Image 1 (cartoon, rainbow, N blue to C red):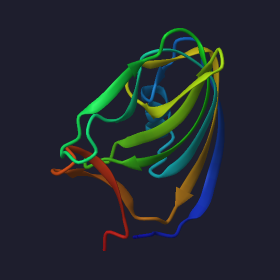
Image 2 (cartoon, rainbow, N blue to C red):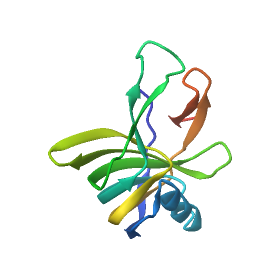
Image 3 (spheres, rainbow, N blue to C red):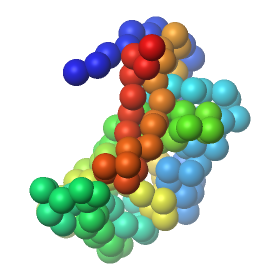
Image 4 (cartoon, rainbow, N blue to C red):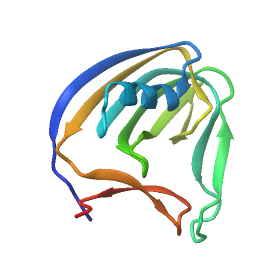
Length: 149
């Protein structure tokens, strides 16, 4: 395990509108407000897109994602971490549980997921920590790295 300590900076409350694209709209907001690292909490509705619900095989690298389409409006609760990518762009990694008609899907919200009616987001900015998303050749995606000194 690796860790990095920081302090809470600003706190933002955001209302997402119907059709807002996730994670892009939160990443754009973070870039506009110069949020480098932060925690994101999301509640509301999701209407479109796909969710990564695991690797096809646990023992293969890089993993082949299983993508499950979002079929109609779902309730959502999610939590994520914003950290800069290799170019300094705030990048959101968010996992969520989506529920509809007594069924729940849990996974990673990927580009193309959109808000249904409303989404409510809280961002807690984290100051003084050295965290970033660094490309992993093994996994073939960017992994959070902390304590990079």
